[in-house]
Image 1: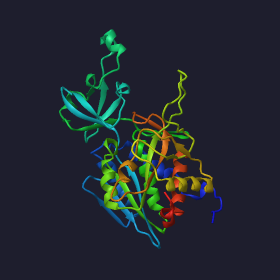
Image 2 (image 1 turned 45 degrees about the vertical axis):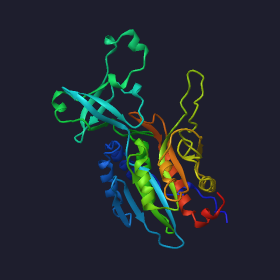
Image 3 (image 1 turned 135 degrees about the vertical axis):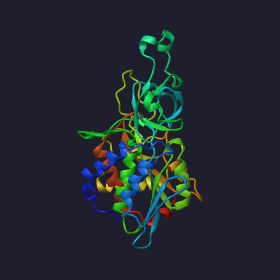
Image 4 (image 1 turned 45 degrees about the horizontal axis):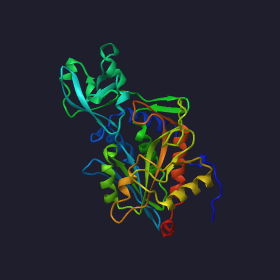
Length: 361
């Protein structure tokens, strides 16, 4: 039976409480391998929402909300806690060489302010001023080894090689837009918390707040194995390719855009999404009048790339909030796209039954 078409307003709404949580999470520092600040916030938020919560050996938070009726599907939902950033390598007098952690475009780093180490010491990424560069240097792209993180002489004594650093951007809401660092994937983290809060009774909901996604989907690999779900959804953010082109060239890869709703993945660099789950999402969106878009096959990837290869194989699909300027000091996303992503996932979970896995793949 086809459900009666319903307004997406019947799903939980993103309000001041959820935006305030997103702000706390965005401002927290959780460069891959050092996700403790975000993990602490997540643990506090879900302590009364799940029946079982544990932190595994890598630092993933694995939470289970048991089904209250049968038959129950074991459904994994994953969102990564980590963010791209930097690691101090070597230095003196407060000037540190550094490596990037995750995919970062070095060209946009000079002059950015950063937070360094566990005490969030202020610093700036420095480069030669134009007055000191040669004509050859100005013609070539800036190199990572020519940059330094400058924390000053005194603070230089308080940080050490191996310490993480991240952009010092503070979250803000600008009209319909949300602006902050690490909204990839703090948007997914808050969405997953809300899905735990509103889990349907017939689903055994297995929530994985994963680590080290930005450096190879490492947390998702062990989380997928440990939770052993029957199917899975990865909740993430994907780059929007909707900026104007001044040279007349079209964006060759990313066709997602702001204000288009959640982006449903068909394929990416690491995953061919399960067609049954794609159709389930599209039918749910049509039934409830939720705008959505198909993310083009192509590059990039999410935790789905590791989850689907665990054990005997796990059907999986990714759903992302589109955002501009991914993996830079500030990502821009739309509140409505986030709301529609939550609505799509709430209704998709409500409509899931074991019969979905009996269909031909």
